[in-house]
Length: 239
Ligand SMILES: Nc1nc2c(ncn2[C@@H]2O[C@H](COP(=O)(O)OP(=O)(O)OP(=O)(O)O)[C@@H](O)[C@H]2O)c(=O)[nH]1
Image 1: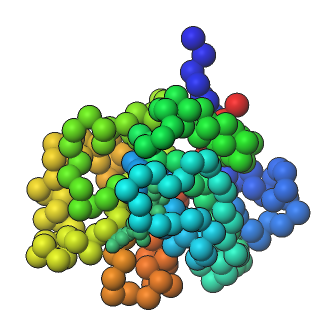
Image 2: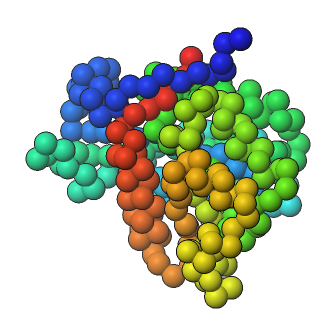
Image 3: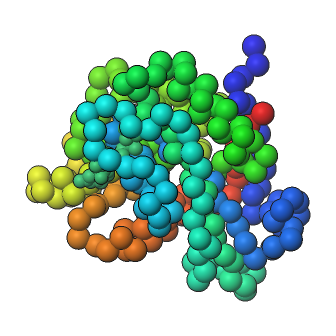
């Protein structure tokens, strides 16, 4: 049976200078990200931080808020990256997705919606990184926490581990509990530790308190760019 949305790899950094739109602007790199996670895990809010905008509707609710996928684009970020002695402008494209599991939509519906959106937005250009958005103050255990990981595996295919990182939201709760990131991860559930091992410890914590929005954003973007560089700017494409 054909693997769904089976990805093929190519070097984004190379091809961006050789093919497509980017050929017209060799000083620009587009980074494509997709957010996955359970309902109310903080996906839209994380998307807004990444974009430096309020494009995605983010609100507390006792049910799922996001019902369809949407793509947001950041402004160009200068002075963030240099290549071959030249400043390269970075633009982030972020795909927000409905919570999985969802309070109103079936799992099949959400999966189909996300699959179509990945193909539509990143089918040709490719996806640099999937971010599993997980609340740090909610224990990672039980059957439901594994659903978004299963969806990532199904949609990204066998190489999913190379293209997945965890974005822990509500990280301020860790500090409030007198822990730090290392202690938190040391005490994490076996299932979370196994997942972190699979994705080569690609994770970032998001603290809503303390630092300015700009600082919060830069910290997360720098970490994300480290993961993408370590992965050789490879992307997953979708058919
Ligand atoms: N304290 C705190 N609140 C957060 C954090 N991230 C998100 N929130 C809040 O959590 C609520 C839900 O956030 P959303 O970003 O809308 O969550 P979502 O995953 O997109 O939600 P659904 O679309 O319903 O699946 C909002 O009130 C956010 O302000 C965080 O890191 N810390």
